[in-house]
Length: 87
Ligand SMILES: [Zn+2]
Image 1 (tube, protein in one colour):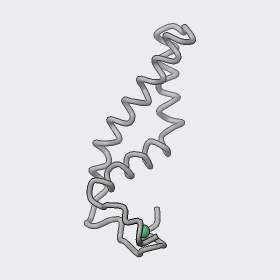
Image 2 (tube, helix red, strand yellow):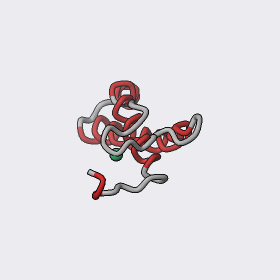
Image 3 (cartoon, rainbow, N blue to C red):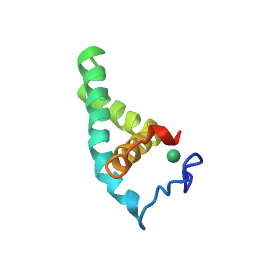
Image 4 (cartoon, helix red, strand yellow):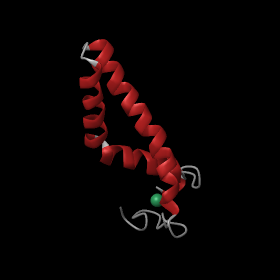
């Protein structure tokens, strides 16, 4: 992740360990992904509970980079507002 925005030069990490807060968001996003994986594998495909469990683990591992980015985006949007005029 770049330190500053290439467009408007905004510093993303406004204080040391700023993105630690994204861990809390990451928990919620992870639960959403896990719930979706369970609903799809258990109720839609009809796998056993044990296999659904492995599907959830696999989903969380595979989507880790996406979950991390979504969480950081949600977290930073609580502190910065998007300014259309600076684009
Ligand atoms: Zn920018």
